[in-house]
Amino acid sequence: MSFDYETARAFAESGDRDVARWFAGRDEECERIEQAVRESSDGRDQTVFRIIQGAPGAGKTSLLTHLRGQASENRIYVPLRHRDLVSTEAVDARIETVLKGRDRAWATGARWALQGAGRAFRAGDVADEAARRMRCHLAENLELVLTLDEGQAVRESAHQVLLDLHATGFGRPCTLLVAGLSHTADVIGSINGISRPSDRAVLNLTALSADECAESTREMLAALCVDAESAVCREAELRIARISHGWPQHLHGAQVALLEQLLGNDGDLGQVDYAKVREESDRRRIDYYEARLQSHPLVRNAEFVARIVQALGDINTPPTYDAVCEVCAVALAGDRVPMSIREEPPGAVALAQAFVTQGVLGKKNRREYAIAVPSMGDWLTSQIGG
Image (cartoon, rainbow, N blue to C red; front, top):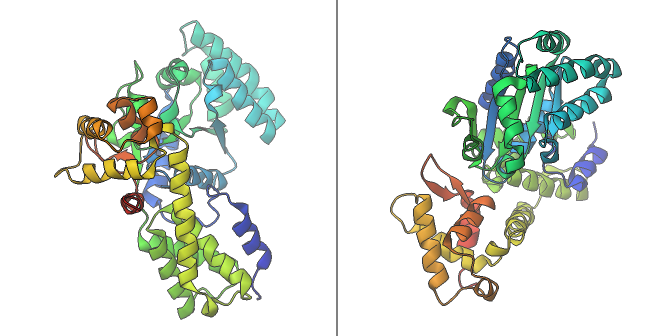
């Protein structure tokens, strides 16, 4: 079969890094989510929470996309938006909208059950007939999985809704998957009434192994009708794995760079210039880092951020949040502070928080922080004096 130009061009031009078209790895995480869905169907009133957290580009959203794509007919994923978390009625409306898009009969059957369960919840009795009806209409025939992306950005106005879900599930059995940066579990656990999530409830996404990266590229090449068993194909898989640094975000960029080469040489892997693939992949990677920095006023200056990162790296052990604040305080007192920050002094705590919220720093464990993505640290270091 000849090289599939149409598929290759569509993927290369889509620009959507969250579409897990050639998903590989994350077997343990997928199984733990499957277990959570099974638990939610065991007749309990509480919603089963799972928190998927990790550094920027760790593949959190692509994991959710993959799960939706692999879902069986009796499972439905409902992507919640932050604006849905203002009331139980808004969440119910969102669920009904998604059900209606799938099957109007489901939506009609679920509407009165949702409303009945909501009334029972507000009356303080979630174990009555309304909850039984909800379970009858949804639990026996449908696995309901709610998803929320950017979980670290949950607003205070959403706390009561999340607490209600955690405590009662609104009378409906379901699973809630919250995806966000590496401090998301802390954000959710800080909601008054929700206890700190257990280790079992938190999935920490780290870099993929070289074999997992290679498997993803192998699936891609096979789908494009490139001989996936040839030696030149195996070389391509290994090279792309090394270029990606094991990070799903960068793996996507490296694969797109490879596809651009194949589109220009009739799909011949033997003619690929891997120096250009690496150059294009690195450009995409750095553009991604710069975009993250530019989206926050306190971390826009790469050299200033790099000096703080370097100082944190000089600490013998991974720094605690207090240590990060101390380093930021020293940096703000120095004579190389960017003018934009000098004009509006943020304070050490605000600057440290900006590093966390923008994914420059990530939670290493319960107390310590580290550079969220190692290759981001390497790039930032190169900015000093550049």
